[in-house]
Length: 176
Image (cartoon, rainbow, N blue to C red; front, side, top):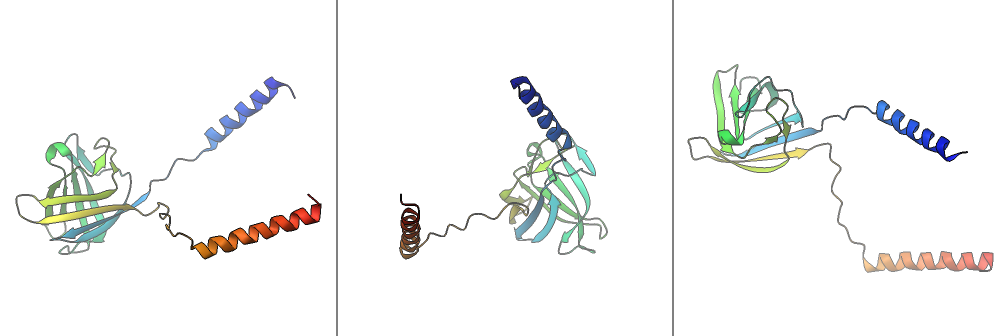
């Protein structure tokens, strides 16, 4: 097979892989708010806002979750840009009440029209008040972290002995 034919086949295979690749799915994130008010909900890592204002923030309507004080356990969530002091606002549209407004860090990256949520733990404070909150955002689709278990010395010695026995039997069998 000629070198040019091999290169052409490789290029064709690469092109086929690129054209057949599916769009990446957004990861599912879990949001847990603790402190003077607690709430929890899940959203994809990237969302299409129901409304947004560049440089201010974006709104998601009717997010299902655990929102104490809401009529139907759904809330309208507003995520604010760092220029607007960051943080989040939780409103119960159906109960016509604001459940919480906080200041803090910006909880997303990218433009307000196509935001991507950040993961981690964020300290938030009540807007115009004294409450303090912690928002933890975790990726539910991420692989679990390694266990960090270290084998005991006896287990390592037993494994080494078994490998040594296998090597000795192989040498004896093949005369090497």
